[in-house]
Image (cartoon, rainbow over all chains, first blue to last red; front, top):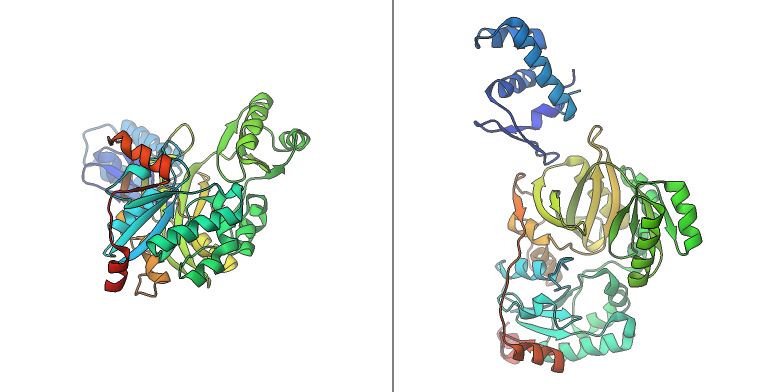
Length: 81
Length: 358
């Protein structure tokens, strides 16, 4: 998974994301921001799952589905490939 | 005080760059007197007394070079112009022809020469694009309906139908394309460019070339919203190295002299840049760059007046431009003055006195 484009993103505390290279902007919730930050630091999906599972009261399957859904969103916006 | 004449003060739904240029100059530390060069009495810049000190009506360039030059000579005899900033494509060829004559009068301009101007013509974009490392949508230049038919078969739909100087519209059918061809050619002449429609977002870059391959600054933005005419209404500043590198290569390749606008599309997935147009003057949104710290009209004037000037392109991304409509109310006597006498002054100054003081 190529996450190079994530490194340029400016992310505010409220989850507002601005890409200074394209001028695009997005909104993400707190878990979404965490996932982006984990991806930027080079973590893979299984590790991200484990880190979030310890933080949120949610089943493992549900969490995995949500993470994959969010990853799909990032791909749809061509932020990761 | 530096006296600067600026054209393109038609701040309407298809705004000219003039009022933005003048605003950038007025907000700079330079002591300037601004002279508007208008082609119509109802150009809003004529009445914007907070920006334009005096306006003169100009004859259309199509009326003949001699008439045009005579008018400039007359204005110069009154105002003692230091600089002219031409902001309209259609008048630029005339200024290119008379630039040296104006220089002998003491009027400075930073504009391209004929060779540079022709090299960035819409009909030559593909060769230029490959030289500067960007892509270019396929296009065909049309000077007749027969050309148009062949072009539409080659390019397909949707396509863009564009004038030689201004205006570009999307066409989804033969009927639409034909109607646009007639409308644009009636207004601007030929050739009409039929260009491949690329799905992507629009980006623009403004800069000023120094005539020796370098630049006085570059500024890029992404269009956030546009009008029905495709003109930017809201924009956000960006930092895109591929776009900036392409513009720098362009300036080096052409040894570009003067203001320019680099219009591009960015394909979303690949972020490949498609060159759409290179406009040979500052765009109407040039004030956005000035407000973000890259005041290109100021730098151009300083360069021409041999004053110290900045060259950097340091600005923050994430600055948004919000365009809005605004009304001013003037007396009909102002309209009388400009329409009957061809001149309207709001901020008189004794020219002899301010030139001596300089």
